[in-house]
Amino acid sequence: MTEQLHPLAPHHMPFFITAPNETDVLLWGTGLFLIAAVLWVGTLYWRLHSLPERMAHGSQKLQFEIVAVLGLISLFTHNHLFWIAGLLLALIDIPDFGTPLRSIAGSVERIAGATPEAPETETEPLIEASPGRNPVAASPSASKEEVRGHA
Image (cartoon, rainbow, N blue to C red; front, side, top):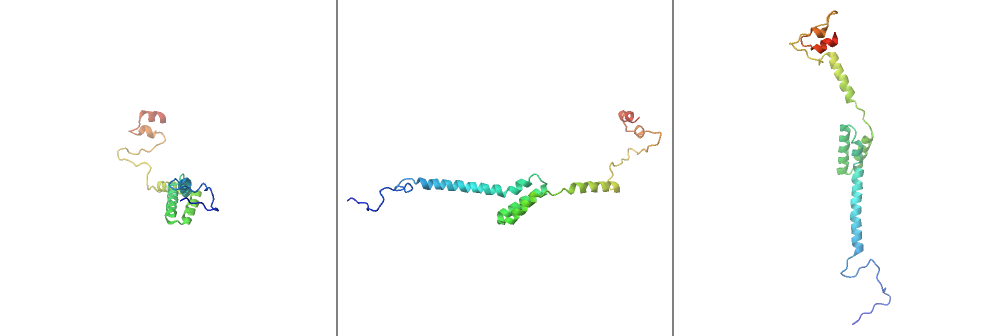
């Protein structure tokens, strides 16, 4: 019993149709391309998502930590407003107010006498300088080099 092809049926099949029990090359190629594309887009997404953190890495520690927390919040809540806030915060250089304020506070403490520069000990009495007397030479703990340098 021989079956005849219908006269309107094509006599050859296109390349993307496989014969029974053969490997579908187009399916495998598309699958591998899809996996590679998902990995590439995921990597691009992670690089873009970590952009504010990488920008704020060289800044102050507090600013970097705030930007990192905003990035994590935006990652887990899918709220892009936190990412934009982190990006803007990473772009802005926050001035260092702490160092000058600590310097001012230290100077005010020294002026007020709250923290003396060198605490006096009871073993070495403080000898005041008189016009004809060298205070270093009069000190009992002065070395010979100090006495020669001041004389």
